[in-house]
Image (cartoon, rainbow, N blue to C red; front, top):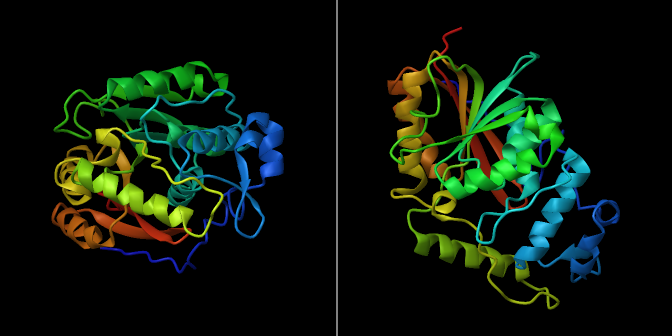
Length: 299
């Protein structure tokens, strides 16, 4: 096992992440004027939005995606996960460091969701080519709409529906496929009830001390995006075991791990399978998360 620990300070994003620091609402509003109607003041008089208002968050995302990734048309259906762009970008910037300077990088995104956010950021930042999978036909349908309505995505991203909920890579990686990287943001919770409770705690923390924000529940995310039986740990175990079946077709497998208690058990499974592992730590605001990367390549 090779554990790579990066010393980080709480709240710091990757040095190359364009979303470091406060949002520049002036620039964002210039790119997307409709964002202006969602701007409020925080307790010290700075511009912000109500992060418990789903429509405000979606509008902010549209502005960020348009400003930094040149994507003109992006939206998600009601009830689907609206991803925090800075954190999603961080994952991509960290795993980019695993690669040598090569052209035509092929990446597999497991569970791309209706938002298709990782292929958007990765293709527009690094020029990576993406295959993106999901088990939800509605997610695939909306992701395809995003791709079809943006010329700069059409030749960079292709989608695959995972038809078997019992598998992750099987049924997605075909015989002649070859990937430099895979990536995944696993469902964290083991039940819908746990997901709801966690989301309410998050909203309460965001609202703390800000009288301008209306209390409410900003809950986006279908079952497959937020929870699965056994939660993150069981999902990671399944992913680890299945990855060994495609050891010759993928150089680096990677996955986010939200709960640090799930790192060692997953590495233990992978070591038994003969994989070499690295852990990259990331910080977004008050949250520390990890990317676990592993390879079966012995070079």
